[in-house]
Structures are given as structure tokens and as C-alpha cells.
Image (tube, rainbow, N blue to C red; front, side, top):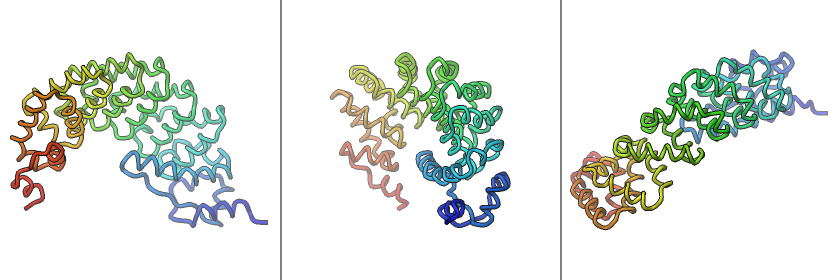
Length: 329
């Protein structure tokens, strides 16, 4: 009869270099791995979508190990393992497969470490797994520690912004009210930040009608300034799509009449996306003026990949000198 552990480890793949987490495994599982080999793993990727997909794929191997050894494979070692590329996947698998009481017990090992975990390239996935699999009330310690660390501090981190997004998506408004107030109070700086802007987008898409309206109101009031920053353009675009057509027309007209604003916006990827939407909302007079402005600025726009796309869509030729400059001729 085949040895279940041998068959399992054979499926996981041949042994690679040992990670730090190896020494924390229970002796019986460590000895079996010594005999039969262990799994390899992929490092998280830079972009969140790719990184999340990779993390999900890698969870299958972690889940197999957890099925073989139970939560004993991570119990008492959750914080240490959570900080490592492979170990964090073992912890996620254990939390995902655990009953409520066991899941809460495992998550309790993260108490006091939430601020650090939120900013970790590996442990942030463990926090996200807790938030999406556990009851909101069992995640209160995450809310508390994020607020204690400072919503701004966590939100403006590449990984920390994801924790706030998951909390805002999953938790009742009353539970995250303090976070919402902190975000709305400092919303303009969140909108133009490369990571925090995603949190504002999350509220616009998943927040209560009252919170969405507050975000839209601030966005409309600060639209000209927000549109001077590429990430601010994306927030304005998301807010724009929530407006009544009459308000969309009024905002498009207002931005188009701000001298040079649309031209500057068109030179960035994020700004060009908003410019395309605004142009379609302009009435004939303002649209003609915008076309005239783009034609006059064809040299500037032609030096930008995104500007050239706007010119092409509008049927305006880029100047030869600008195109040559953009490709190094």
C-alpha cells in the first residue's frame, strides 16, 4: 500500500532550497519531507492582479499540506510563517479550511502585528484571507489595529491599501465608520496617491449611497485640481460615471473650459481615459473648442503615446517633429 505522505509529497514536487519556515514544521512532518522532498513555490508578482492570481494558484499546495498535517502545521507559528512566501500560503489554507473557532484562534496569533502584516508583501495576503473568510465581527481586531496605526499610514502603502479595500467591501458601515471618516476627511490626498486612490474607488463602487454622495461631492468640488494628477483623473472618472447625464455634461463643460487642462490630462494613461469620456459628453460648441485646443497642442500631444491616441481618435494628425521625437528620431 502506498504511503499517503509519500504520495502527497510526490504530488507537491521535488525538493528545492529550504525556506526559513521549514524549521518551524512539526517534527513528524519535517522528517517526512526530509525523506520524500517538499514543494517549490512562486514568488508574488509586482502587480496586484497577477500577484493575487499567483497566490490563489499556490494555495493548492498549501491546502494539500494542511489536509495532511491539519492546522498543527501552522498553529503557534502563524505570524512567523505569514511573513514568508510559502509559509503565508500554508497559513491562508489553514484559515480557509478551519471551522470558525479554529479560524479565530489562528487569526488571534496576528494580534499586535496587523500594522506590520498590512505592509508585508506576504502577510497582507493572510490578513485579506481572514477578512474574506471570517465573520466581520471576528475581524474587529484588524479594524482596531489599522485605526490605531493610522488609516493614512496603512492606506498609502502598496499592500496596506488592499487591507482597507477588503474591510470596506466586507464589513458593515458601522464597523468601519472611523475609517470612512478618516478617508473622507483627507480625500483629496487619497485621490491623487498611487495606492490610496484605489480605496476611494472602492467606496464609490461598494459604499453606502450616503458615502458615495459625499465622495462625489468632494470630487466635483476639487475636480480641476484632482485632474492635474494622473491618479486623481481615475477617481474623477469613476465618480463621473455615477452622475446623472446633466451633471456629467456640466462637469465636462467645466473641465474643458479650464485652459490647457484637457491637453495636460491627455498626456497620461489615466488622464487620457477621462479625456475620452469627457469629449463624448461635450456639446457641439465646447467640443469644437476642445478640438481646436488639441489641434494647437498636437506637437505636445504627439510626443506622448497616450496623447497620440487621443489625436488619432479625434482625427487630428500629430506633427512629424513630435512623432520623430517620441521614437528618438
